[in-house]
Image 1 (tube, rainbow over the protein chains, first blue to last red):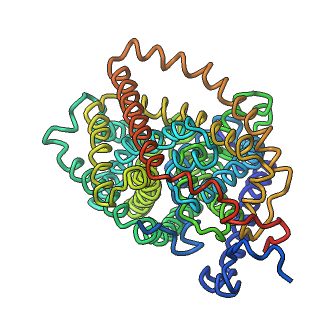
Image 2 (image 1 turned 180 degrees about the vertical axis):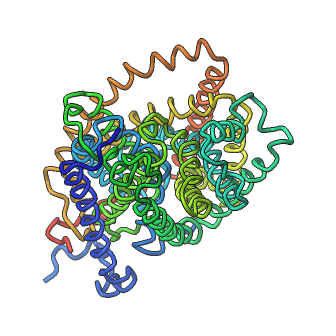
Image 3 (image 1 turned 180 degrees about the horizontal axis):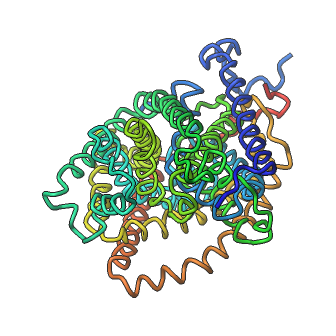
Length: 58
Length: 529
Protein backbone atom coordinates (compact mmCIF):
# COMPACT_ATOMS: atom_id res chain seq x y z
CA UNK A 1 0.00 0.00 0.00
CA UNK A 2 1.32 3.47 -0.88
CA UNK A 3 2.07 5.70 2.11
CA UNK A 4 1.18 8.83 0.20
CA UNK A 5 3.43 11.06 -1.81
CA UNK A 6 6.87 11.22 -0.19
CA UNK A 7 9.15 14.27 -0.38
CA UNK A 8 11.38 12.56 -2.96
CA UNK A 9 8.37 11.45 -4.97
CA UNK A 10 6.97 14.98 -4.85
CA UNK A 11 10.27 16.47 -6.01
CA UNK A 12 10.48 14.03 -8.92
CA UNK A 13 6.87 14.69 -9.88
CA UNK A 14 7.30 18.48 -9.75
CA UNK A 15 10.62 18.35 -11.64
CA UNK A 16 9.23 16.02 -14.32
CA UNK A 17 5.97 17.88 -14.86
CA UNK A 18 7.68 21.27 -14.47
CA UNK A 19 10.45 20.57 -16.96
CA UNK A 20 8.00 19.28 -19.58
CA UNK A 21 5.68 22.25 -19.02
CA UNK A 22 8.62 24.67 -19.31
CA UNK A 23 9.82 23.04 -22.54
CA UNK A 24 6.41 22.92 -24.19
CA UNK A 25 5.63 26.50 -23.13
CA UNK A 26 8.96 27.76 -24.50
CA UNK A 27 8.47 25.92 -27.79
CA UNK A 28 4.89 27.08 -28.23
CA UNK A 29 5.85 30.65 -27.37
CA UNK A 30 8.61 30.57 -29.98
CA UNK A 31 6.37 29.00 -32.61
CA UNK A 32 3.35 31.21 -32.02
CA UNK A 33 5.40 34.42 -31.87
CA UNK A 34 6.85 33.82 -35.34
CA UNK A 35 5.23 35.62 -38.26
CA UNK A 36 2.91 33.49 -40.41
CA UNK A 37 4.75 31.56 -43.09
CA UNK A 38 3.36 33.61 -45.98
CA UNK A 39 4.34 36.93 -44.38
CA UNK A 40 7.73 35.55 -43.48
CA UNK A 41 8.32 34.51 -47.08
CA UNK A 42 7.25 37.96 -48.25
CA UNK A 43 9.66 39.68 -45.86
CA UNK A 44 12.53 37.64 -47.22
CA UNK A 45 12.04 39.40 -50.53
CA UNK A 46 12.90 37.69 -53.77
CA UNK A 47 13.11 33.91 -53.64
CA UNK A 48 16.71 32.79 -53.73
CA UNK A 49 17.00 31.18 -57.14
CA UNK A 50 20.45 30.21 -58.28
CA UNK A 51 20.63 31.54 -61.80
CA UNK A 52 24.17 30.15 -62.21
CA UNK A 53 25.41 33.37 -63.75
CA UNK A 54 26.23 35.38 -60.63
CA UNK A 55 29.62 33.87 -59.89
CA UNK A 56 31.55 36.77 -61.41
CA UNK A 57 29.05 39.51 -60.66
CA UNK A 58 30.47 42.86 -59.49
CA UNK B 1 0.25 16.75 -60.09
CA UNK B 2 0.18 19.70 -57.67
CA UNK B 3 2.30 19.05 -54.62
CA UNK B 4 0.42 18.94 -51.31
CA UNK B 5 1.66 21.15 -48.49
CA UNK B 6 0.82 21.95 -44.90
CA UNK B 7 -1.22 25.11 -44.48
CA UNK B 8 0.51 26.49 -41.40
CA UNK B 9 3.45 25.96 -39.07
CA UNK B 10 1.30 25.11 -36.05
CA UNK B 11 -0.77 22.80 -38.24
CA UNK B 12 2.09 20.46 -39.05
CA UNK B 13 3.27 20.53 -35.43
CA UNK B 14 -0.19 19.56 -34.19
CA UNK B 15 -0.45 16.85 -36.84
CA UNK B 16 2.91 15.30 -35.87
CA UNK B 17 2.10 15.62 -32.16
CA UNK B 18 -1.33 14.13 -32.84
CA UNK B 19 0.24 11.20 -34.59
CA UNK B 20 2.48 10.55 -31.58
CA UNK B 21 -0.17 11.08 -28.89
CA UNK B 22 -2.24 7.95 -28.53
CA UNK B 23 -3.35 5.35 -26.05
CA UNK B 24 0.28 4.67 -25.12
CA UNK B 25 0.60 8.10 -23.53
CA UNK B 26 -2.36 7.56 -21.20
CA UNK B 27 -2.31 3.82 -20.61
CA UNK B 28 1.13 2.35 -21.39
CA UNK B 29 3.35 5.03 -19.83
CA UNK B 30 1.81 4.98 -16.32
CA UNK B 31 1.89 1.17 -16.26
CA UNK B 32 5.54 1.08 -17.33
CA UNK B 33 6.49 3.68 -14.72
CA UNK B 34 4.69 1.90 -11.89
CA UNK B 35 6.27 -1.46 -12.78
CA UNK B 36 9.78 -0.02 -13.12
CA UNK B 37 10.58 2.05 -10.08
CA UNK B 38 7.85 4.72 -10.08
CA UNK B 39 9.50 8.14 -10.01
CA UNK B 40 12.93 6.52 -10.50
CA UNK B 41 11.72 5.47 -13.96
CA UNK B 42 11.80 9.13 -14.98
CA UNK B 43 15.62 9.26 -14.86
CA UNK B 44 16.25 6.72 -17.67
CA UNK B 45 13.10 8.02 -19.35
CA UNK B 46 14.41 11.58 -19.73
CA UNK B 47 17.90 10.37 -20.65
CA UNK B 48 16.35 8.28 -23.45
CA UNK B 49 14.28 11.25 -24.55
CA UNK B 50 17.42 13.37 -24.94
CA UNK B 51 19.69 10.71 -26.42
CA UNK B 52 17.27 8.77 -28.59
CA UNK B 53 13.86 10.39 -28.91
CA UNK B 54 14.42 14.01 -29.88
CA UNK B 55 17.56 13.42 -32.04
CA UNK B 56 15.85 10.69 -34.07
CA UNK B 57 12.79 12.89 -34.53
CA UNK B 58 15.02 15.67 -35.89
CA UNK B 59 16.64 13.16 -38.22
CA UNK B 60 13.25 12.05 -39.58
CA UNK B 61 12.01 15.63 -39.97
CA UNK B 62 15.18 16.56 -41.86
CA UNK B 63 15.16 13.57 -44.21
CA UNK B 64 11.44 13.92 -44.84
CA UNK B 65 11.66 17.57 -45.88
CA UNK B 66 14.75 16.83 -47.98
CA UNK B 67 12.89 14.17 -49.94
CA UNK B 68 9.68 16.18 -50.14
CA UNK B 69 11.35 19.22 -51.63
CA UNK B 70 12.71 16.91 -54.33
CA UNK B 71 9.23 15.66 -55.14
CA UNK B 72 8.91 12.50 -53.05
CA UNK B 73 6.55 11.98 -50.13
CA UNK B 74 6.78 8.23 -49.67
CA UNK B 75 9.61 6.44 -47.91
CA UNK B 76 10.73 4.46 -51.00
CA UNK B 77 11.09 7.73 -52.89
CA UNK B 78 12.72 9.61 -50.02
CA UNK B 79 15.18 6.78 -49.34
CA UNK B 80 16.03 6.72 -53.06
CA UNK B 81 16.73 10.44 -53.00
CA UNK B 82 18.99 10.14 -49.96
CA UNK B 83 20.76 6.95 -51.02
CA UNK B 84 21.11 6.77 -54.82
CA UNK B 85 21.14 3.03 -54.91
CA UNK B 86 18.53 0.81 -56.63
CA UNK B 87 18.22 -1.20 -53.40
CA UNK B 88 17.40 1.75 -51.15
CA UNK B 89 13.76 2.04 -52.20
CA UNK B 90 13.02 -1.47 -50.96
CA UNK B 91 13.97 -0.45 -47.41
CA UNK B 92 11.07 1.98 -47.67
CA UNK B 93 8.69 -0.99 -47.71
CA UNK B 94 8.99 -1.15 -43.92
CA UNK B 95 7.94 2.50 -43.63
CA UNK B 96 4.68 1.54 -45.37
CA UNK B 97 4.18 -1.92 -43.90
CA UNK B 98 4.46 -0.67 -40.31
CA UNK B 99 1.80 2.08 -40.46
CA UNK B 100 -0.47 -0.03 -42.69
CA UNK B 101 -0.47 -3.10 -40.44
CA UNK B 102 -0.75 -1.00 -37.29
CA UNK B 103 -3.72 0.80 -38.82
CA UNK B 104 -5.47 -2.54 -39.40
CA UNK B 105 -5.75 -3.19 -35.65
CA UNK B 106 -5.48 0.35 -34.33
CA UNK B 107 -8.74 1.32 -36.03
CA UNK B 108 -10.42 -1.49 -34.09
CA UNK B 109 -9.08 -0.12 -30.79
CA UNK B 110 -10.22 3.31 -31.94
CA UNK B 111 -13.72 1.89 -32.38
CA UNK B 112 -13.53 0.44 -28.84
CA UNK B 113 -12.85 3.95 -27.53
CA UNK B 114 -15.77 5.44 -29.45
CA UNK B 115 -17.95 2.52 -28.38
CA UNK B 116 -17.07 3.03 -24.71
CA UNK B 117 -17.70 6.79 -25.01
CA UNK B 118 -21.17 6.07 -26.42
CA UNK B 119 -21.81 3.49 -23.69
CA UNK B 120 -21.10 6.23 -21.14
CA UNK B 121 -23.57 8.55 -22.88
CA UNK B 122 -26.29 5.94 -22.46
CA UNK B 123 -25.12 5.06 -18.93
CA UNK B 124 -24.79 1.34 -19.63
CA UNK B 125 -21.19 1.25 -18.41
CA UNK B 126 -22.06 2.39 -14.88
CA UNK B 127 -22.00 -1.10 -13.38
CA UNK B 128 -21.07 -0.35 -9.78
CA UNK B 129 -18.00 -1.63 -8.00
CA UNK B 130 -17.77 -5.17 -9.39
CA UNK B 131 -14.48 -5.50 -11.33
CA UNK B 132 -15.71 -8.79 -12.81
CA UNK B 133 -18.63 -7.00 -14.49
CA UNK B 134 -16.25 -4.70 -16.35
CA UNK B 135 -14.00 -7.59 -17.35
CA UNK B 136 -17.00 -9.48 -18.73
CA UNK B 137 -18.28 -6.42 -20.55
CA UNK B 138 -14.85 -5.84 -22.11
CA UNK B 139 -14.44 -9.48 -23.19
CA UNK B 140 -17.89 -9.50 -24.74
CA UNK B 141 -17.45 -6.06 -26.34
CA UNK B 142 -14.17 -6.94 -28.10
CA UNK B 143 -15.20 -10.51 -28.96
CA UNK B 144 -12.46 -12.07 -26.85
CA UNK B 145 -14.45 -15.24 -26.19
CA UNK B 146 -14.58 -16.75 -29.68
CA UNK B 147 -13.30 -16.15 -33.19
CA UNK B 148 -15.96 -14.73 -35.47
CA UNK B 149 -18.14 -13.60 -32.58
CA UNK B 150 -17.96 -9.95 -33.66
CA UNK B 151 -19.67 -10.90 -36.90
CA UNK B 152 -22.82 -12.13 -35.16
CA UNK B 153 -25.96 -9.97 -34.91
CA UNK B 154 -25.24 -9.49 -31.21
CA UNK B 155 -22.34 -7.20 -32.18
CA UNK B 156 -24.06 -5.23 -34.93
CA UNK B 157 -23.78 -2.06 -32.87
CA UNK B 158 -20.00 -2.41 -32.57
CA UNK B 159 -19.63 -3.17 -36.27
CA UNK B 160 -21.57 0.00 -37.11
CA UNK B 161 -19.24 1.96 -34.81
CA UNK B 162 -16.25 0.39 -36.55
CA UNK B 163 -17.64 1.29 -39.97
CA UNK B 164 -18.20 4.88 -38.84
CA UNK B 165 -14.64 5.05 -37.48
CA UNK B 166 -13.29 3.64 -40.73
CA UNK B 167 -15.35 6.09 -42.78
CA UNK B 168 -14.24 9.11 -40.70
CA UNK B 169 -10.60 8.13 -41.22
CA UNK B 170 -10.97 7.81 -44.97
CA UNK B 171 -13.09 10.93 -45.30
CA UNK B 172 -10.36 12.97 -43.59
CA UNK B 173 -7.52 11.30 -45.50
CA UNK B 174 -9.39 11.82 -48.77
CA UNK B 175 -9.60 15.56 -48.06
CA UNK B 176 -5.83 15.68 -48.04
CA UNK B 177 -2.97 16.81 -45.85
CA UNK B 178 -4.01 20.41 -45.30
CA UNK B 179 -7.82 20.27 -45.55
CA UNK B 180 -8.18 16.87 -43.88
CA UNK B 181 -5.41 15.94 -41.44
CA UNK B 182 -4.26 19.42 -40.50
CA UNK B 183 -7.72 20.90 -40.07
CA UNK B 184 -8.87 17.96 -37.96
CA UNK B 185 -5.77 18.01 -35.72
CA UNK B 186 -6.17 21.75 -35.18
CA UNK B 187 -9.61 21.08 -33.71
CA UNK B 188 -8.98 17.71 -32.04
CA UNK B 189 -5.77 18.53 -30.15
CA UNK B 190 -7.17 21.46 -28.13
CA UNK B 191 -10.32 19.42 -27.38
CA UNK B 192 -8.12 16.57 -26.13
CA UNK B 193 -6.25 18.94 -23.81
CA UNK B 194 -9.54 20.33 -22.48
CA UNK B 195 -11.05 16.88 -21.88
CA UNK B 196 -7.88 15.63 -20.18
CA UNK B 197 -7.66 18.74 -17.97
CA UNK B 198 -11.28 18.26 -16.88
CA UNK B 199 -10.60 14.63 -15.93
CA UNK B 200 -7.33 15.66 -14.22
CA UNK B 201 -9.15 18.30 -12.15
CA UNK B 202 -11.72 15.65 -11.15
CA UNK B 203 -9.05 13.12 -10.14
CA UNK B 204 -7.00 15.62 -8.12
CA UNK B 205 -10.09 16.75 -6.16
CA UNK B 206 -11.29 13.28 -5.21
CA UNK B 207 -9.73 13.49 -1.74
CA UNK B 208 -10.27 10.22 0.14
CA UNK B 209 -13.51 8.78 -1.29
CA UNK B 210 -13.64 5.85 1.13
CA UNK B 211 -12.84 6.95 4.72
CA UNK B 212 -12.37 3.31 5.72
CA UNK B 213 -9.40 3.18 3.31
CA UNK B 214 -7.43 6.33 4.30
CA UNK B 215 -4.40 5.24 2.23
CA UNK B 216 -6.43 5.28 -0.97
CA UNK B 217 -6.37 9.04 -1.43
CA UNK B 218 -5.11 11.49 -4.04
CA UNK B 219 -1.77 11.65 -2.19
CA UNK B 220 -1.62 7.86 -2.10
CA UNK B 221 -2.40 7.66 -5.83
CA UNK B 222 0.28 10.19 -6.72
CA UNK B 223 2.70 8.36 -4.41
CA UNK B 224 1.91 5.06 -6.15
CA UNK B 225 2.85 6.62 -9.46
CA UNK B 226 5.73 8.92 -8.48
CA UNK B 227 7.44 7.65 -5.29
CA UNK B 228 10.82 6.39 -6.49
CA UNK B 229 12.25 2.94 -5.93
CA UNK B 230 15.89 3.80 -6.60
CA UNK B 231 16.87 0.12 -6.53
CA UNK B 232 15.06 -0.24 -9.86
CA UNK B 233 17.76 1.88 -11.50
CA UNK B 234 20.21 -0.99 -11.01
CA UNK B 235 18.07 -3.21 -13.20
CA UNK B 236 18.64 -3.23 -16.96
CA UNK B 237 14.91 -3.93 -17.34
CA UNK B 238 14.09 -0.42 -16.10
CA UNK B 239 16.41 1.20 -18.64
CA UNK B 240 15.07 -0.95 -21.45
CA UNK B 241 11.48 -0.18 -20.49
CA UNK B 242 12.19 3.56 -20.39
CA UNK B 243 13.94 3.55 -23.76
CA UNK B 244 11.19 1.44 -25.26
CA UNK B 245 8.50 3.77 -23.94
CA UNK B 246 10.20 6.84 -25.45
CA UNK B 247 10.63 4.99 -28.69
CA UNK B 248 6.99 3.86 -28.97
CA UNK B 249 5.56 7.07 -27.65
CA UNK B 250 7.27 9.43 -30.06
CA UNK B 251 6.39 7.43 -33.20
CA UNK B 252 10.08 7.11 -34.05
CA UNK B 253 10.60 4.34 -36.60
CA UNK B 254 6.98 4.24 -37.76
CA UNK B 255 7.65 5.90 -41.13
CA UNK B 256 5.16 8.62 -40.22
CA UNK B 257 7.28 11.68 -39.34
CA UNK B 258 9.36 11.28 -42.48
CA UNK B 259 6.15 11.32 -44.55
CA UNK B 260 4.55 14.26 -42.72
CA UNK B 261 7.79 16.29 -42.95
CA UNK B 262 7.89 15.71 -46.70
CA UNK B 263 4.95 18.09 -47.13
CA UNK B 264 7.00 21.00 -45.75
CA UNK B 265 8.38 23.72 -47.96
CA UNK B 266 12.08 24.25 -48.47
CA UNK B 267 12.23 27.16 -46.02
CA UNK B 268 9.96 25.65 -43.37
CA UNK B 269 11.59 25.08 -40.02
CA UNK B 270 12.14 21.49 -38.90
CA UNK B 271 14.20 21.97 -35.74
CA UNK B 272 11.86 24.06 -33.60
CA UNK B 273 8.83 22.30 -35.09
CA UNK B 274 10.28 18.87 -34.30
CA UNK B 275 11.12 19.90 -30.74
CA UNK B 276 7.67 21.42 -30.24
CA UNK B 277 5.86 18.32 -31.50
CA UNK B 278 8.05 16.11 -29.25
CA UNK B 279 7.46 18.31 -26.22
CA UNK B 280 3.69 18.27 -26.85
CA UNK B 281 3.79 14.50 -26.85
CA UNK B 282 5.65 14.62 -23.53
CA UNK B 283 3.05 17.01 -22.14
CA UNK B 284 0.29 14.50 -22.85
CA UNK B 285 2.36 11.63 -21.50
CA UNK B 286 3.99 13.01 -18.35
CA UNK B 287 1.72 15.88 -17.32
CA UNK B 288 -1.63 14.27 -18.18
CA UNK B 289 -1.10 10.51 -18.48
CA UNK B 290 1.22 10.43 -15.47
CA UNK B 291 -1.14 12.44 -13.29
CA UNK B 292 -4.49 10.87 -14.23
CA UNK B 293 -4.52 7.18 -15.01
CA UNK B 294 -2.72 5.37 -12.21
CA UNK B 295 -3.50 7.83 -9.41
CA UNK B 296 -7.22 7.54 -10.30
CA UNK B 297 -7.07 3.75 -10.49
CA UNK B 298 -5.19 3.54 -7.17
CA UNK B 299 -7.67 5.73 -5.31
CA UNK B 300 -10.47 3.23 -6.01
CA UNK B 301 -8.68 -0.07 -6.56
CA UNK B 302 -5.60 0.22 -4.34
CA UNK B 303 -2.38 -1.56 -5.30
CA UNK B 304 -4.37 -3.85 -7.63
CA UNK B 305 -4.28 -0.90 -10.05
CA UNK B 306 -0.67 -1.80 -10.84
CA UNK B 307 -1.55 -5.33 -11.92
CA UNK B 308 -3.51 -4.41 -15.05
CA UNK B 309 -1.97 -4.46 -18.53
CA UNK B 310 -2.41 -1.57 -20.95
CA UNK B 311 -5.89 -2.56 -22.15
CA UNK B 312 -6.90 -3.87 -18.74
CA UNK B 313 -6.05 -0.51 -17.19
CA UNK B 314 -7.90 1.43 -19.86
CA UNK B 315 -10.97 -0.70 -20.52
CA UNK B 316 -11.48 -2.59 -17.24
CA UNK B 317 -9.90 -0.68 -14.34
CA UNK B 318 -10.84 2.86 -15.37
CA UNK B 319 -14.53 2.12 -16.08
CA UNK B 320 -14.61 0.70 -12.55
CA UNK B 321 -13.06 3.94 -11.30
CA UNK B 322 -15.51 6.16 -13.18
CA UNK B 323 -18.43 4.19 -11.77
CA UNK B 324 -17.21 4.93 -8.26
CA UNK B 325 -16.48 8.65 -8.62
CA UNK B 326 -19.03 11.46 -8.44
CA UNK B 327 -20.20 12.50 -11.96
CA UNK B 328 -18.35 9.42 -13.22
CA UNK B 329 -20.65 8.96 -16.23
CA UNK B 330 -19.74 12.41 -17.56
CA UNK B 331 -16.02 12.02 -16.86
CA UNK B 332 -16.04 8.52 -18.31
CA UNK B 333 -17.48 9.90 -21.54
CA UNK B 334 -14.90 12.72 -21.61
CA UNK B 335 -12.06 10.24 -21.05
CA UNK B 336 -13.02 7.78 -23.77
CA UNK B 337 -13.95 10.52 -26.21
CA UNK B 338 -10.49 12.00 -25.63
CA UNK B 339 -8.91 8.57 -26.23
CA UNK B 340 -10.95 8.28 -29.44
CA UNK B 341 -9.64 11.65 -30.66
CA UNK B 342 -6.09 10.67 -29.67
CA UNK B 343 -6.47 7.44 -31.60
CA UNK B 344 -7.92 9.04 -34.71
CA UNK B 345 -5.15 11.64 -34.98
CA UNK B 346 -2.73 8.70 -34.85
CA UNK B 347 -4.57 6.45 -37.31
CA UNK B 348 -4.76 9.23 -39.89
CA UNK B 349 -1.00 9.44 -39.83
CA UNK B 350 -0.78 5.71 -40.54
CA UNK B 351 -2.75 5.99 -43.77
CA UNK B 352 -0.94 8.96 -45.27
CA UNK B 353 2.46 7.25 -45.95
CA UNK B 354 0.77 4.56 -48.05
CA UNK B 355 -1.55 6.97 -49.86
CA UNK B 356 1.50 9.07 -50.73
CA UNK B 357 3.20 6.03 -52.25
CA UNK B 358 0.19 5.06 -54.37
CA UNK B 359 -0.07 8.63 -55.66
CA UNK B 360 3.56 9.16 -56.56
CA UNK B 361 4.44 5.57 -57.39
CA UNK B 362 1.60 5.01 -59.84
CA UNK B 363 0.32 8.51 -60.56
CA UNK B 364 -3.06 7.67 -59.01
CA UNK B 365 -5.53 10.40 -58.14
CA UNK B 366 -6.51 10.68 -54.50
CA UNK B 367 -9.89 8.97 -54.85
CA UNK B 368 -8.26 5.98 -56.57
CA UNK B 369 -5.44 5.67 -54.06
CA UNK B 370 -7.84 6.12 -51.10
CA UNK B 371 -10.15 3.44 -52.53
CA UNK B 372 -7.28 1.00 -53.06
CA UNK B 373 -5.90 1.64 -49.58
CA UNK B 374 -9.40 1.35 -48.14
CA UNK B 375 -9.80 -2.12 -49.63
CA UNK B 376 -6.35 -3.21 -48.48
CA UNK B 377 -6.77 -1.96 -44.92
CA UNK B 378 -10.34 -3.32 -44.72
CA UNK B 379 -8.95 -6.74 -45.57
CA UNK B 380 -6.51 -6.59 -42.64
CA UNK B 381 -9.08 -5.06 -40.35
CA UNK B 382 -11.48 -7.88 -41.26
CA UNK B 383 -8.75 -10.38 -40.36
CA UNK B 384 -8.31 -8.78 -36.91
CA UNK B 385 -12.08 -8.60 -36.41
CA UNK B 386 -12.65 -12.23 -37.35
CA UNK B 387 -9.75 -13.62 -35.27
CA UNK B 388 -10.83 -11.76 -32.14
CA UNK B 389 -10.48 -14.60 -29.65
CA UNK B 390 -8.07 -13.46 -26.93
CA UNK B 391 -6.91 -10.80 -29.39
CA UNK B 392 -4.30 -13.21 -30.79
CA UNK B 393 -4.25 -11.65 -34.27
CA UNK B 394 -4.00 -8.15 -32.81
CA UNK B 395 -1.23 -9.14 -30.39
CA UNK B 396 0.72 -10.90 -33.14
CA UNK B 397 0.47 -7.88 -35.46
CA UNK B 398 1.46 -5.62 -32.60
CA UNK B 399 4.46 -7.70 -31.60
CA UNK B 400 6.04 -8.40 -34.99
CA UNK B 401 5.21 -5.07 -36.62
CA UNK B 402 4.30 -2.59 -33.87
CA UNK B 403 7.25 -3.62 -31.70
CA UNK B 404 10.00 -5.58 -33.51
CA UNK B 405 9.97 -3.98 -36.97
CA UNK B 406 9.95 -0.40 -35.71
CA UNK B 407 13.38 -0.99 -34.18
CA UNK B 408 14.59 -2.22 -37.56
CA UNK B 409 13.17 0.78 -39.40
CA UNK B 410 14.62 3.17 -36.82
CA UNK B 411 18.05 1.57 -37.36
CA UNK B 412 17.69 1.91 -41.14
CA UNK B 413 16.73 5.58 -40.78
CA UNK B 414 19.59 6.24 -38.39
CA UNK B 415 21.97 4.62 -40.87
CA UNK B 416 20.51 6.68 -43.72
CA UNK B 417 20.88 9.93 -41.80
CA UNK B 418 24.21 9.40 -40.07
CA UNK B 419 26.14 7.33 -42.57
CA UNK B 420 24.59 7.75 -46.02
CA UNK B 421 23.34 11.33 -45.91
CA UNK B 422 26.25 12.23 -43.63
CA UNK B 423 25.99 14.36 -40.52
CA UNK B 424 27.78 17.37 -42.04
CA UNK B 425 25.37 17.56 -44.94
CA UNK B 426 22.44 16.66 -42.69
CA UNK B 427 23.32 19.40 -40.23
CA UNK B 428 23.27 22.02 -42.97
CA UNK B 429 20.03 20.61 -44.36
CA UNK B 430 18.36 20.59 -40.93
CA UNK B 431 19.19 24.25 -40.38
CA UNK B 432 17.54 25.55 -43.54
CA UNK B 433 14.87 27.90 -42.22
CA UNK B 434 15.53 26.71 -38.65
CA UNK B 435 14.55 28.97 -35.76
CA UNK B 436 16.75 27.26 -33.21
CA UNK B 437 20.07 25.46 -33.57
CA UNK B 438 20.71 21.77 -33.00
CA UNK B 439 23.89 21.44 -30.94
CA UNK B 440 26.69 19.81 -32.95
CA UNK B 441 27.08 16.91 -30.52
CA UNK B 442 23.54 15.77 -31.40
CA UNK B 443 24.76 14.89 -34.89
CA UNK B 444 27.45 12.67 -33.39
CA UNK B 445 24.86 11.11 -31.11
CA UNK B 446 22.68 10.21 -34.09
CA UNK B 447 25.63 8.78 -35.98
CA UNK B 448 27.38 6.85 -33.22
CA UNK B 449 25.31 6.66 -30.04
CA UNK B 450 21.79 6.10 -31.40
CA UNK B 451 22.62 2.95 -33.42
CA UNK B 452 24.42 1.42 -30.43
CA UNK B 453 21.58 2.43 -28.13
CA UNK B 454 19.02 0.96 -30.54
CA UNK B 455 20.95 -2.28 -30.73
CA UNK B 456 21.29 -2.33 -26.95
CA UNK B 457 17.49 -2.23 -26.70
CA UNK B 458 16.76 -4.46 -29.68
CA UNK B 459 19.03 -7.39 -28.78
CA UNK B 460 17.66 -7.93 -25.25
CA UNK B 461 14.16 -7.35 -26.66
CA UNK B 462 14.73 -10.16 -29.17
CA UNK B 463 16.27 -12.42 -26.55
CA UNK B 464 13.41 -12.07 -24.11
CA UNK B 465 10.36 -11.67 -26.34
CA UNK B 466 11.01 -13.37 -29.68
CA UNK B 467 11.31 -16.97 -28.35
CA UNK B 468 7.98 -16.54 -26.57
CA UNK B 469 6.21 -15.34 -29.71
CA UNK B 470 8.05 -17.84 -31.88
CA UNK B 471 6.69 -20.64 -29.70
CA UNK B 472 3.20 -19.19 -30.03
CA UNK B 473 3.48 -19.68 -33.80
CA UNK B 474 3.78 -23.40 -33.29
CA UNK B 475 1.04 -23.54 -30.70
CA UNK B 476 -1.54 -21.18 -32.16
CA UNK B 477 -2.71 -21.39 -35.74
CA UNK B 478 -4.11 -17.83 -35.68
CA UNK B 479 -0.69 -16.47 -34.72
CA UNK B 480 0.76 -18.39 -37.66
CA UNK B 481 -1.87 -17.03 -40.06
CA UNK B 482 -1.20 -13.52 -38.74
CA UNK B 483 2.53 -13.75 -39.49
CA UNK B 484 1.74 -15.17 -42.92
CA UNK B 485 -0.63 -12.26 -43.53
CA UNK B 486 2.14 -9.78 -42.63
CA UNK B 487 4.49 -11.64 -44.98
CA UNK B 488 2.01 -11.50 -47.87
CA UNK B 489 1.45 -7.76 -47.40
CA UNK B 490 5.23 -7.19 -47.26
CA UNK B 491 5.79 -9.13 -50.50
CA UNK B 492 2.92 -7.23 -52.13
CA UNK B 493 4.43 -3.88 -51.07
CA UNK B 494 7.88 -4.92 -52.33
CA UNK B 495 6.33 -5.81 -55.66
CA UNK B 496 4.55 -2.46 -55.86
CA UNK B 497 7.80 -0.67 -54.99
CA UNK B 498 9.58 -2.56 -57.73
CA UNK B 499 6.95 -1.52 -60.28
CA UNK B 500 6.97 2.08 -59.01
CA UNK B 501 10.77 2.12 -59.20
CA UNK B 502 10.63 1.07 -62.85
CA UNK B 503 8.08 3.80 -63.50
CA UNK B 504 10.28 6.39 -61.78
CA UNK B 505 13.26 5.27 -63.86
CA UNK B 506 11.19 5.39 -67.05
CA UNK B 507 9.93 8.89 -66.33
CA UNK B 508 13.37 10.08 -65.25
CA UNK B 509 12.25 11.02 -61.75
CA UNK B 510 15.76 10.62 -60.36
CA UNK B 511 17.62 12.11 -63.31
CA UNK B 512 16.48 15.58 -62.31
CA UNK B 513 18.11 15.06 -58.91
CA UNK B 514 21.58 14.71 -60.36
CA UNK B 515 22.03 18.47 -60.29
CA UNK B 516 19.88 19.11 -57.25
CA UNK B 517 22.56 20.95 -55.31
CA UNK B 518 22.82 23.44 -58.15
CA UNK B 519 19.07 23.94 -58.23
CA UNK B 520 18.75 24.16 -54.46
CA UNK B 521 21.93 25.89 -53.32
CA UNK B 522 23.05 24.94 -49.83
CA UNK B 523 23.17 27.88 -47.47
CA UNK B 524 25.88 28.06 -44.82
CA UNK B 525 24.91 27.58 -41.18
CA UNK B 526 25.48 31.29 -40.46
CA UNK B 527 22.20 32.03 -42.23
CA UNK B 528 20.29 30.50 -39.34
CA UNK B 529 17.44 32.82 -38.39
